[in-house]
Image (tube, rainbow, N blue to C red; front, side):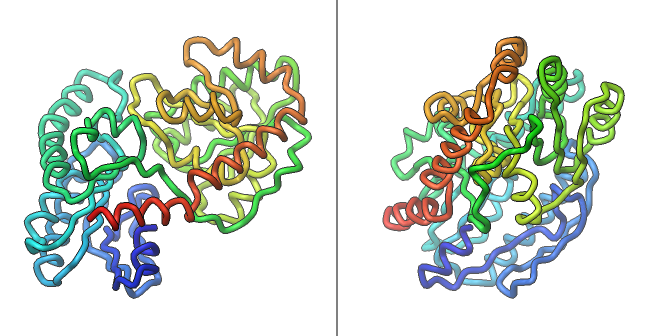
Amino acid sequence: MAYKYFSSRDFKAVALYSNFSHSLKKFRYFDNQDFIPLQTIAYDSSLSLRRILSYFIFACKVFVHLRRHKTDIVYVNLPPNILTLAVFLGCRKDTKVIVDILDLWPESFPHNGTTVIKLALKMASFISSPIRKYAIEKSDFCIAESNLFYEALQLHNKYESSVVHLKKFESVHPILNKIDDVFSIIYLGNIGNIYDFESLLSIVKGVEKTRPVKLHIIGLGPNRSWLLDKLKSLSIAYVDHGASFDEGLKMDVLSTCWFGFNGFKKGTQVGLSYKSIDYLSCGVPLLNSLGSDTFRLVADEGVGFNFSNDNLESLIEKLSLLSPADVLAMKKNSYSLFKGRFSGDSYFSDMDKVLRAI
């Protein structure tokens, strides 16, 4: 999105990216001469030394690129926080740097794992947090993807900063006047460690007592086999679509679902998830357990239901009594919210203000 924005404003824009995809866990390349792949190494686990090494290699190659090419503006996404050291050491003094904080890693990882995981996360935070603080102070403009991050990082103390919520370019218009005959829930995205699939299973089994339920899954991740085994053992009707970045397929599946599941384990520090923007862009209301930004949007805009992991009975009761007409009204609200707050047009408008500021 940043590449498209700067290109539209008469800049010669290039995008430096790791040729190893974190989400796909495989090497990938983009068919765009302005997208420059930097060779890194593969890793299987999100909590591994190979992941850290892969990021370090990427940061070193970004440093080399910036030393060789004069750049007016660098727009850098965090994490990995080490990337900012490469940027500030590699840039010339007159280069403007925009830091965009997309995640509070490692703080965003739930702190309820094993003692070893807790210790590893504490060490990672001890190292990376000061680097991020340095990046914020040294940047010409700092962006946070949510109010939660803005407040947690105390960006109100930095004059050149703002919240620019996650955005998405729209490719296909969703179906807003039709839903599945069967009560259907979609889970989209990484099937990983921070998502609360136990609550999802409990919600489905609870609603099944009063009406048929079907679960759709689009995604991959380390807990995929566990989740599919659970669905089979609980006799839950589901459709596994695998992993897909095909916007047409996602729209076909999502746009007639009743709700999108946006449940996270307690202790996860996320204000707004990528999957929630995907849901809203397809006119899909949310079943949400995140606090902060997403909680307020759901409560104020009529785009689904908030729930607590330790009190699912209230949500199950509401879903059991819900009519198709109620859901269709929430679908229209969801898409309207997306267009106003999270579309490509709104991103361009937000970035115009950033560009004027620097």
